Image 1 (tube, helix red, strand yellow):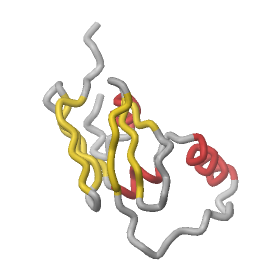
Image 2 (spheres, helix red, strand yellow; image 1 turned 120 degrees about the vertical axis):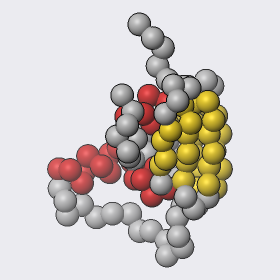
Image 3 (cartoon, helix red, strand yellow; image 1 turned 135 degrees about the vertical axis):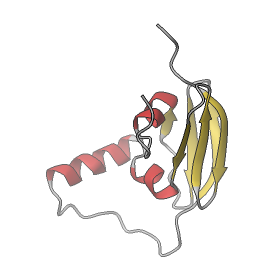
Image 4 (cartoon, helix red, strand yellow; image 1 turned 45 degrees about the vertical axis):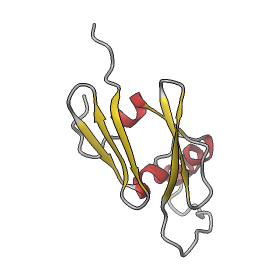
Length: 108
């Protein structure tokens, strides 16, 4: 059994999002809004579950300022934490999770 792909190179662009070149030769690109919406944090998961159960769920008030990614921090050897301009920074994006939400759907 082969090991799960790991990032060979990560680049965070404040307005464009996260780019990952994987060690298996594939690449993934994640927009800022997608990363924020699919944050694996408990708070974001509860909101997604509430919306799935009731589409009329009241969303938290947002800012008129465009959402940006302020910085990223590696967490051990398994994840990255992204700090967003709306103050959110509690989601740990594991490599496995990022592969599963690849917008291009090219990840195995």
